[in-house]
Length: 325
Image (cartoon, rainbow, N blue to C red; front, side, top):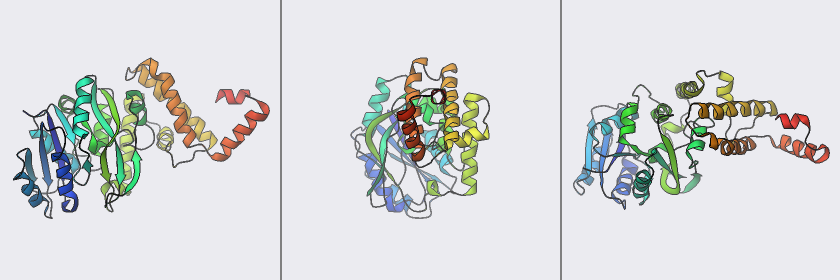
């Protein structure tokens, strides 16, 4: 029985599919099964998969009659998976050779961790570097980032490895979530386990024109708002719209007013204390998370206010109003 089940949904990915498949077959870790789910492709994807099946017995093809969506395709693969660990892979991305080996070693040496990601590089269609994704490695900071900034900030889900039992306990992917089923799954895993990321670049995420994740339409925005509400309700029991909007705005390319920044700080402090009370994180993590909060707030502070505060501190010292902040 294989230790790892790699599940890859495929939909009309013929241009990049062979490279994605080879990136898994070329892993330094070899004790895996490779379940590829053709989600009703209308191109030559199925033929490309079959050509690889003839050369490697670890590949198993599941063909869905019609396009059912990412969540249904991942569930179809997971339903037949036998491995102790479940690994994701997207059909247009590339796993670097040591990815599976390092994730397996990490989970085996950290039994308290249920899901582990990696750092990844965002590349163009022809694999030219665009940016780096370096999510935090510590569980407490990963939890914090589930609530602030981008929905997917704490993980590159397509490079995630998790324990089979954890996915079973969560009930798999919600097939009603046509958009962001990966973020929905992470929302349901909050408080169930510990998370981690390996601080090594082990995955290439290919950004291409027309990708679902790059489409910003009204329906997609509705799903994102729904997920944010669910996450906040998990820890607060409520999801005030003002807090949702502020927490979503704590991202590098946003700029908050001084008033908004102060309100966001109160929201994040409430998050930190709520996670401690819920025993999602240890109380000893509070100073680290406050430091992490301040770094994130610094990135969204208007430069004019930074200059003003520096000038005020230099000329007048730390006044009462600044201490209150």
